[in-house]
Length: 275
Image (cartoon, rainbow, N blue to C red; front, side, top):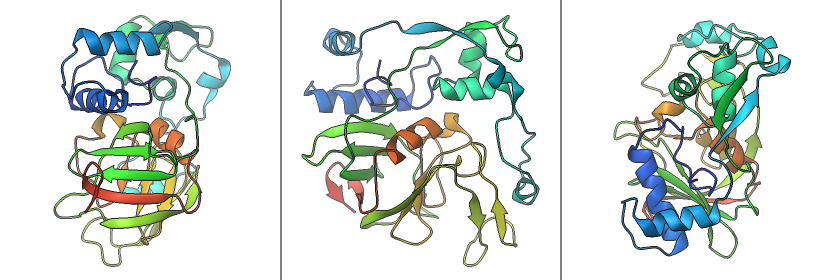
């Protein structure tokens, strides 16, 4: 229900963790509920009243789901750069991503399923619409909260997402900037110049959901920085980045589809405050 309300818990894994608690805080704030983190009756009533419909649904695996192509994705960037595309590794990974699910939860709900066979019926999370109700006028990247919040032109919160932001060693940028461009199927260019990490050669890694930016890139006006997807949705909000802002692929796509050139992006240490 949090996912449907556009206050994303990140990957849905069936566990109560930090990203779920963060989504609860953002949902409460947006709905004017008391600022608590518990699953109290008031929160549950609000979710049930606003997010109707079944929690799970039956999905039939299609021929397109299983035909691929699928790829063995190496960990080394140099080997990744030699691929035709950094695509899905299996039908199971593709389906889990489509329904915002952790692969372990997908397997647990379907212990006997053959994910490689078209016609197989499986149980999946019934997530909601993947488009925001209006264009995003402003984005806040909240460093202290590991979150991204999108606002409309009247200042109403449209959505919130768990995010991986920069570390002490590789901090995210500060202040206000704007969206320059959106690449919905982006390759990833690694340039070792001025970097203290990564290989010592310039590499261009082809597009795909398993490349380092999840194949989605929202370019910001500070060169080299952006908001992007990730090949590891289960790690969002739980690790640090090299300065950019990582979201799950589905959250990154939802946000990218609702921004345009000139959308304001503010890096803040707390809600409403620029760093």
